[in-house]
Length: 130
Image (cartoon, rainbow, N blue to C red; front, side, top):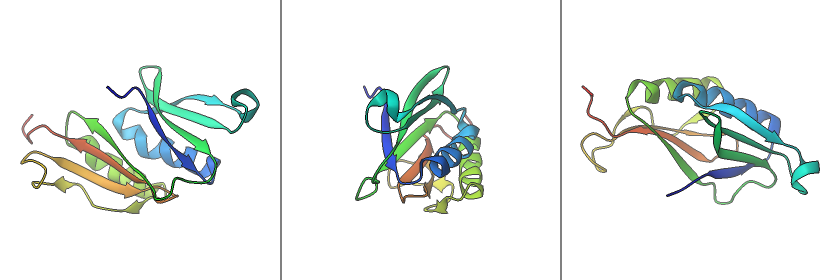
């Protein structure tokens, strides 16, 4: 079981604002920030829900090649809302909301590229009527 993950970003403030806006529709908020003075090497920010950060960004040289992170939700509407919010926050479309039947018949996802080109996805595995 994965406890947390993250990406390295080139512009910490810009990416923090992007993720705050893009992840809000799925219930994620900025929960914690830890400055370089505490970590000993870089600023970090943790996003999550229910008081537990499980997605972290840190200032530095972005991961190359960019990585893919997918967030799972229980209904399709948050997938659509994420996509719109992420584009509104400066993300680039990498696959609008829709069925990806090559994964399975109910795989409903949307993809955006964050400011550093990381492929961020929100996915719902439930049927449309769930």
